[in-house]
Length: 149
Image (tube, rainbow, N blue to C red; front, top):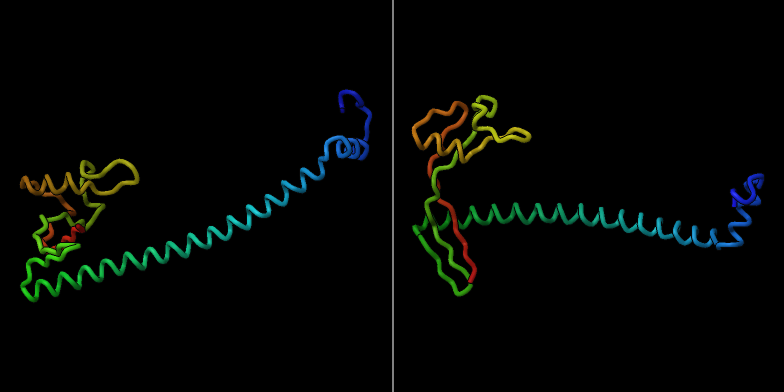
């Protein structure tokens, strides 16, 4: 339109486009769609936040219940519980690396990214008799293994 009528004023242009294309109706539909999408996004974000909190509670319950079953099985000297739908057994886990002071670790044991300890490399080094400042082997511990049928 502007190429054909370079001297046209904004109101005339808007009225002409509105009459020729139902531009206002299209924009109203899109604007309402934006409002609906914003409302849905807000509701979904609130739902996701609530579900994250629920997920965290379930994870905490898993840890707590696992520890309780482990403690009771150890205190009662029950190495295994077999059921039709699962088996719970006590097993010795290999020693794991505990990091006492991350900043004291030599850079060879830090993984490139936001620096964090490379526990596999530290475990291998300590297992081979190498001293790794800032790390030590934690004593072996008993864990609970659950397998579903």
